[in-house]
Length: 488
Image (cartoon, rainbow, N blue to C red; front, side):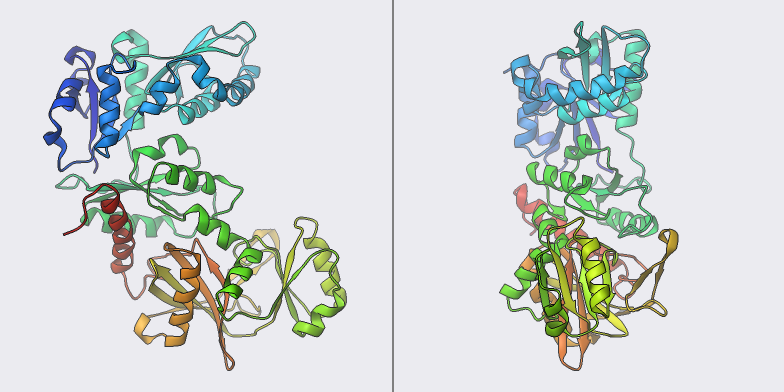
C-alpha cells in the first residue's frame, strides 16, 4: 500500500502516537531527498506557514519536482494567499454555501473545513466543493453579514486545540483510509491506481468482483488499486493514474475526472479525446469512413432529410441510432416508412442529427478489446433470446442479455483482429472495445467503445489474470516515462 507521509515544522505539532502514518519534519524532507529515492509517498504538508518562500512552500514545490503526490499544491497555496487570487472561485462557492445556509436555523460567523469535511453540521456539500477548489488540509471559512464568504484562511494543525484538533485528526484519519486494500504488501507500492466507479450504476463496465480481482493482481505487481466515486474529484491528485469503470459520457462526472487527470499529467483510461470520439456515433462514422474502415452503409440525417430516400438507399429494415447512447439504448430497428418517421421524430426531440444504418442480421457480434494498439481479448456476444441485439431492454428498465464465448487472439479470425486494431488506432492509444459484424460479405465495424466491459469471467476468461497484468503494464509504462524512470 502506498505510504502516507505527514510533514510538520516541529515534532510537537503532531506527535507520532496521534497517527498511524509517518510524521517527518519539513526540514528533513527538504534536505534529505535520498530518503525517498525508492518511494512515492502521499504527502500531506502540515507546515505552520504556506507563505511564499517559506519552508512549507518549498516542501510542496520540491514534492512536485520529485513527482510526489502532495497536499496542498503550490497552486493552492498561492491562490489562497490573497482574496484577489481566489475571487474567481467565489461565485460557485457562495452559491453552494447559500444552498446549505438555507436549511439552517442559525448562521455561524466562521467554521472549519478539514479535508472536505465541515466541523459544523449542514455544510457537507459546500465543504466538498471547497476542497475540490483548494486541496488544503484545513481552511477556516469566515462569513460576511450577507452570508457569503468574507475570507478563506488556511489553518495550521498546531493552532487547533481541543475539539477542533480532535475533529481535524478524525478527518485526517478518514481521508487516508482506503477501502479496497488487500492484505498489507510486504514492500511499498510503486504507484497507485484510482478506479472511478459509480455505486448507483446497475450495469457498470466492470463488476465489484472483477475490480477486486484487479486489485489482487495489482498488489502482486506492487501497485495499489483504490476505488473512488463521483464525489472524490478533489482527491484525484493523490493518485498516480486513473482507470474509469463507470459508463462514460461527455455530460457527466466521468468526463470531469478524465479532464482533471489530464491536467494533473496522469495516465488515464478513458481519456477525454477517446470519450469525445467514441461516445458520439456521428463523429465516429466520419472518423472511420475517412480512415477507410469498412462499416455498414450509413446515412446521417437531420430534421429536413427526405426519409423516403432512406430505405431506398439502405434497404429494409433500417437501424436508427441516436448519436449518444450505451448498452444498445436509443437504437431501433424499423421496417416501414411509418415506423421510420415515428422513431425519427422521437429521436429528433433530443438531437439535431441521427444515424440510419443498414441492418446486418447475425447471431452474434464480435467484441475485440484493444489496448495500446494491440489486441487484448476477443469475445462473441450472442443476441438476446428472441431479439436482434445482444441486449434486450424490457419494461421497468429490465435488461436481458445473450450468452458469450471468449477466444484466444490466435484462434480469432485474422481479419476480425486486423480490422479491430485498425479501428482502435484511429481513436487513440488507450483501451477500446471494437464491435464487429461478420458475414459472407466480410467484416464491418459497428462502433468503437471507449469504455468496454472487462469482467474476469467473460472478457478475461482466456487470459485470466494476464488481462489485468497487461492493463497495469499499460499504465506503468506511461508512468515510468513521465517520472523519468524508464524500465530497464
